[in-house]
Amino acid sequence: MTNYPRIDHADWWRSSVVYQLYVKSFADSDGDGVGDLDGVVEHLDHIAALGVDAVWLNPCYPSPNRDGGYDVADYLTVDERFGGLPAFERLRDACHRRGLRLMMDLVPNHCSDQHAWFQAALAAGPGSPERARFHFAEGRGPDGAEPPNNWRSTFGGPAWTRVPDGQWYLHAFDATQPDFNWEHPAVAEMFDDVLRTWFDRGVDGFRIDVAYAMVKAHGLPDLADPEGENPYLWNQPGVHDIFPRWRKIADSYDPPRNLLGEVWLPPAQIADYLRPGELNQAFYFDLMQQPFEAGAFRASVSATFAALDGAEGVPTWTLNSHDVHRAVSRYGLVEPEPVRSADPNAIRTRARGRVDVALGTCRATAALLFVLALPGSVFLYQGEELGLPEVQDLPDEARQDPIWARSHHTEHGRDGCRVPLPWSSGAPAYGFTTGSAWLPQPDWFAPFAADTQQADPASVWHFYRRAVAAHAELDPGVGLQWLDAGRDDVLAFRRGSVTCVVVFDGEDFVAPEEWGDPLVATRDVAGRSCPAASAAWFRR
Ligand code: NOJ
Image (cartoon, protein in one colour):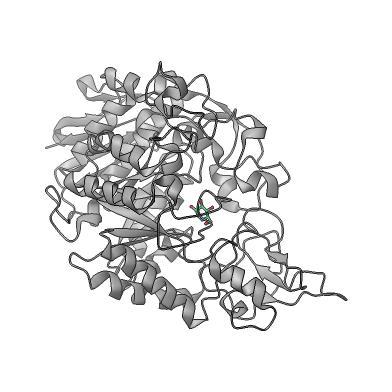
């Protein structure tokens, strides 16, 4: 079953390019309007043609789907809506036949309120062993009618919900996502089983949801500023006791399985997650949160590598995901509207307003070429290879992200980057489904459809193919050396024989002869002249 024609080394992840699949929105094979795993199989050659090393599936476990599947009701199987386990096996085999690794999503901080353990906890009542696997507590105030502490949910509103017998339970996200109590040994044992089950089924690695959240500050103390960041919920030292246990399990397989953490922290703190025996990779979202400015990009990357001394794992770069506005719109936002959010990351990544799509496309492709040149791994999010902007104009009644309701309709949430992909410019639902797509696609999608993009040699799609192919030629063992480009609005660095230059702004930049010949570029670099909002690689 495990047959990897193209990538045969155990450390494949160190310089990998991985395609993130938001399964619900990729391709629907059975006409119910929701993407599924057989839809992925049908379009797998689209992904393989990009030259990526692996795919990562957002959660596709049985789920009431109150938070896009991050409310897991059963960790050990695949939702029937996505085709169940048989479809998973077809996808796994189709990936491995093409030399693509398959990563899944582990959600260890919380489950769904429909999970058997939470249902048992509700039925068993206060003080029961069943409740001890979650954070249940008495409320405050005369009738216990106030939550046990003043923490806020990341999605807005209180982080506690009261059950009919009067106790409250903690949820860092939606009320339908109760947090596990990781001080209870049964929780860790359950996740050991989850890892082994999927590794035995041939999964090559896991992306770990909010990997810095599982352990809370002892006693769950009140916050001095409930509206600010919550230092008691994230990045507690105890979380580092969990990873060696998982790493041992992952390393007991041949080849060893990969563990990638979702860690929204500054670069200096993420390095702790990559220490020997902990995670193989962690997302560095700091770069994604920076404006398109040379100084900001350089500072973020420099801070990353300065802190990594002694780490075993590698940084993982991404410019897009199912949680943030698409890069074309972030970088092309020319008239931002003010953002209000309980989540500081949202303020930096989900501003709305008027977008200059042409500018945003130039900048997003330049930023991609920049991250592809860095040491480490790069994750792409479905649709960015088509140049898709954020869909800001969804009808309000179509919105499904719990953030929209929990923020009392003040924060639009993440639906705009989850709109089903356009495959075919002239087909109903752009070829995504023969039914009615679960989120409406806008009428301006046609130029971004895969068939249109593939027919145009100057498209974003063809640029992505060239860029990923060039990345495959870099030597993963070679580090980065900054060069002085002589201007504040230009960044240049060398990796071995390749020099990457990004012109953020200003006049054209003429690349020195000693850098060699152009290898790949976002714009025409004839005469070695790189315009503003462009990037290019040269090779000696
Ligand atoms: C991070 C996931 O990426 C996001 O989509 C989800 O809502 C939260 N974690 C909660 O699981």
